[in-house]
Image (cartoon, rainbow, N blue to C red; front, side, top):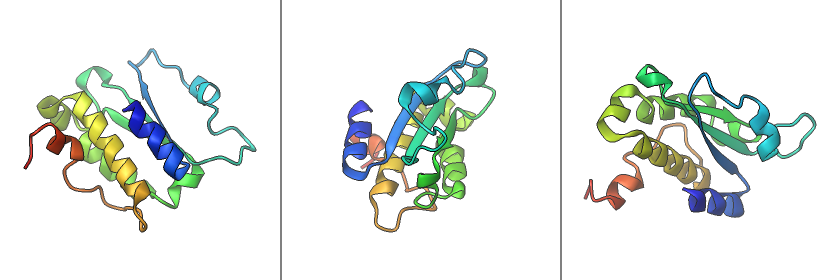
Length: 135
């Protein structure tokens, strides 16, 4: 996961970070300072924060904080579809939160590397193939 984020940033300039939290114990906006993201007047707005929070199994586990510089490449509908595909309690119960996060990260990385970017989430994640779950 770390390597995927590092290589994506190096190759594309998009910064992808993952925050795992357990509501109500959350860092809130302090992560912006910690990761130097989304500060007023900052020109670098090509960042994505994937917030992972299981909410006690009662809600969607994947939420996204996306900088303005990402919205042209991946519009709001993409994030809704990504969260609906991998973040639902049904998906997480069946596959686990770890696979949900990995598949979401790989979908983001794939879409940011394509020339036309994405509106729809790519079909089955590469992680499923790597784990031998798909042919």
